[in-house]
Amino acid sequence: MAPSQAAVLEADETEEAAMTSAIVTIHPRADRAQHLRILEAVLFAASEPLDMAKLARHLPEGTDVQSLLDDLKTNYANRGVNVVLVSGKWTLRTADDLSFVLRREVVEQRRLGKAALETLAIVAYHQPVTRADIEEVRGVALSKGTLDTLLELGFVRMRGRRKAPGRPVTYGTTDQFLKHFGLNEIGDLPGLQELKGAGLLDATLPPGFEMPIPRVSEELAPDEDPLEDEAQMPLEMHLPEPEDAPQET
Image 1 (cartoon, rainbow, N blue to C red):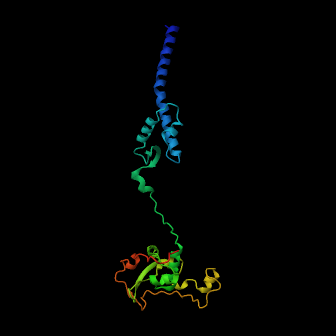
Image 2: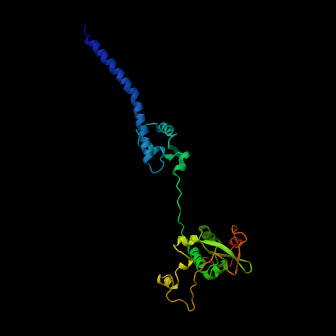
Image 3: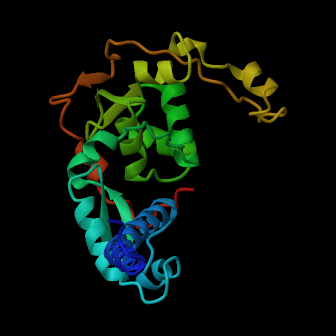
C-alpha cells in the first residue's frame, strides 16, 4: 500500500531537518579552516610582523583572531617555519633548530682608508721600514691601528728588528699583497714615469725627487736582526700616541 501524502511530507521534513542540522554542525568548522588559511596567507605575504588589529582586518567582524593564531602556532610548531610573536606582533620565522641550514658565510670586502693606503705604499716601496720611517715619509704620526689593519689583512708582515736604539720592528710586504694587487714580484710595482702617466704624481716634481726602487728579499738586511718571537705583537704597536703628535688624516 502506497504511503499517504502526509507521511511523505513528514519524511521529507525530517530529512531536511537532519541535513540542516548537519550543515549547522559542519559550516563553522569550514569557516574556521578558511580563516586559518587566510591568516596563513597574510603572514606569509607580510614584509614585517603584523599586530592583531591588522590581522583582524582580513577576517569577518567578531572572529576570534587570538584563538586562530594559537591554533596556527600549534600547527606550525614542528615545521621548518614557526608562527611566532615578536614585540607583540605575529610573523613567520625559520625554526630555531634549522637556522644553521640557512647560514651563509661571505667574504666582506674592506676598503682601506687613506692612511692605510699611504702606509702600505710606503712599506711596499721602502721596505724594510720601521714605524718611524713611515712617519717620516708621511710627515704625521701613525695611528697604532693602521699597521694592525694591514697585518690583519695579510698585506704586511713583521720582518725583524732594526739594529738601532730601541730595536724597532721592521715591516715588509707579503705574498698576499702580491696576489691581491696582481703582481708577480714587488719589482712590478709602477715606477716614476708610470705613476706620472696615470696622473698619480704631479708632472712638475721638486728638484732632487727620487722614486725608490721597490725590492724585497726573504733574507734579513744587514741592519736587521731576527724577531725573538714572530707570534708576539711588538711593544711599539701598543704604545699611546704622543700628545703633541700631528693628527693622522
